[in-house]
Amino acid sequence: MIGLLISGATAFLVAIFATPFAIRVLRRNDIGQFIQEDVEGHAHKKGTPTMGGVVILLAVTVAYVISHIRLWDVGHGPTFEMREFTPQGIMAMVAFLGMGLIGFLDDFVKYARRQNQGLSKRWKFLGQIAIAVTFAVIAISSNVSTEISFTRSLGLDLGPWLYAGLVLLMLTATANAVNLTDGLDGLVAGTSALVFGAFMIIAFWQFRNPDFYQVDGALDLGLFAAALAGTVLGFMWWNAAPAQVFMGDVGSQALGGAMASLALLTNTQLLLVILGGLYVATTLSVIIQVFSFRVFGKRVFLIAPMHHHFEMKGWPETTVMIRFWILGALFVAVGLGVFYGDFITATGGP
Image (cartoon, rainbow, N blue to C red; front, side, top):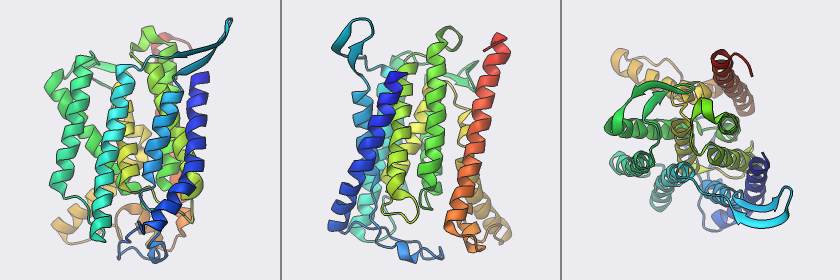
């Protein structure tokens, strides 16, 4: 528990104090946001510093490492030793930093071209394949469960090849879903804090009940999730409306990769659909919009993703953001309820 607090607090402090420095550097180098022209009411955001997600990568990494330093041994007093970095924690960091690197390259290309088009779909997908393959190879060599799972493994073993395909699907789908949702000030930062807080609780509960869940490295995954939760809360201090900095693709892609890795490694792959229900709904709004327009020639939403639809209907940005926060919180509450309910049902008690 102390390790979780240290991880979250360290991440929060690094993020909240490093972000203003990053904002000055980004402004000095004229690294600002390019605005989608068909999104009404966002013209004033043009030029707002972007790529602030670099701070997210830094804060999570620093906090995760520091949380492994043990300075006090109960019953023995001061000490200095390092907790083990488990393969599960390393895999989560690979997915997080790897997807963040792809997002960084995407943002950098936008900056170099001075337009809102970054990496081509081909190069982005190739990068995501490389990250997924690396993750899958480490997972299989570390004897990570390759079974499909909901709140825990369902007993259906995918085998190495199908598991690698699942890793690719989850990493790309979650990263893109979070990226699509990142269209309003503080929206992704606020909702992802809830999701990562849920994963921190899930991982810690699995650590406390090892015989029931049999998840290796659960505490290490909890430290990673705590670092993510603390980081996005610290970043949101500067990203909340009116945002002084945007996380960019480097941030949204990294956060999506982290969510997918936590779901894969805590054996809650299908539960992520509930915990990240807001991201699923946002992605579905885009799919529905494209399908309806191409097949029927009609648009279901005024514009997709759906948060912009409500803006065009006259809702203030902060109203949309707060209501989506509420929806995100409800999805997370249901997900945690399902997770705990399965434990109660299976064991007959808390």
